[in-house]
Length: 260
Image (cartoon, rainbow, N blue to C red):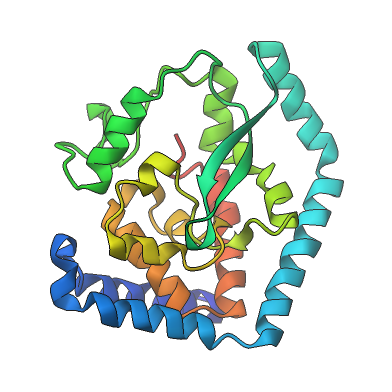
């Protein structure tokens, strides 16, 4: 085991220990909602201007490199989408960002254009409120807290989602300063409406393309644990932790872990 792997595992172990204290998340107030909010705010305030500049510089340089060097790959994906289904190549979707602000998130289109999102709205509401009877809508894929075999998704879209390639246009959002490479994933507005107050602490920072949730369970993780991972990340942020998460994201993407 390398030094980096050992450190990352200790980070995860510490996060899991922290999360264990919040297992009864529906009664989070008894664990100190105010204290949790204060700790999160102090952790953000403690970040030095140098760290902030370095994180933003990493976002800009990495985004430019991916968008320029990956242009031929982006073009190939665009052609696949265009040749296999009707509709635009890119999909623009309203998301909730830092401190509850809204922004338009870019993705490669993976769904048909005539979709009804009512099923997903209901699933999301039940997922956030912990009311799912089974961890998957597909009994053959137990342990997955995500809609699987979604009929709205195209054949090419299914592959792009599994490998997380549909997320690549979000480097544009990162370049524009609406997102960062590592951070909490931005929710949809109707997801955000279902949040308890303590859930909103995960959006005290810019949303990210990847994060602890993506490299430590992804859609096999229940909602309250995902929130605790994001809060742990905010309270324990460092550039080293960012780099470790970025490095771990690549094999997760290649293996298609948790992507549906």
